[in-house]
Amino acid sequence: MKKALFSFIYFKLLGWKAEVSVPDYDKCIICAAPHTTNWDLIIGKLFIGAIGRESGFLMKKDWFFFPLGYLFRWMGGIPVDRSKRTSLVEQTVELIKKSPKFHLAITPEGTRSANPNWKKGFYFIASGANIPIVLIGIDYHKKCIYANKAVMPTGDIDKDMREIKLYFKDFKGKHPEKFDIGEV
Image (cartoon, rainbow, N blue to C red; front, side, top):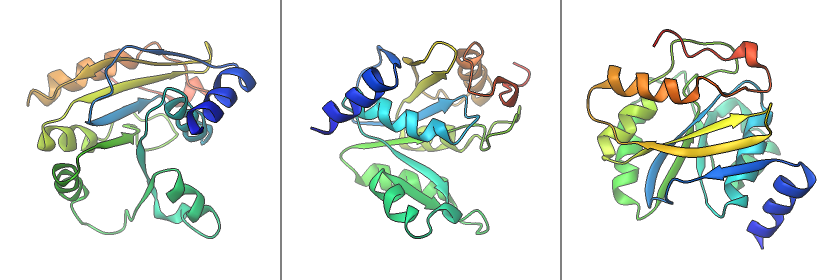
């Protein structure tokens, strides 16, 4: 039922397309980019539901106020308190190890503004849990979301981050000027 509803909205009402060739891993980190608008969350959740998959996501705890907090939690949202210096990476790795299935979408830019210095937490989580990173590219120009590559962390973060960033270089966010892969 949920898949049918999300498919109808994503494909028919909004006119988006999907190109997916990565397997539906039991556990993975989803690296989604470019992230240039709050609409990415809605489009991304519709995409994931339309292809019959599930995913949680991290979001600033400031957004979890009434009544939005209930909606975001229902959608898979996990509130993050950026003011606290706790190891979100270690906590997430432990949670993954205890879970039979785990999918978490993270936007590596960490903001909706141009940021060439991508956050690497998603990489450290995947590396610590020994799970793949599924790369999902959002292209507003083509109205298509692509999931055609997965990267298994090798421990060589510079090499792996270069490969990850290069995957996203041609995708156009809703506001392309707000996306920057930096020097690769």
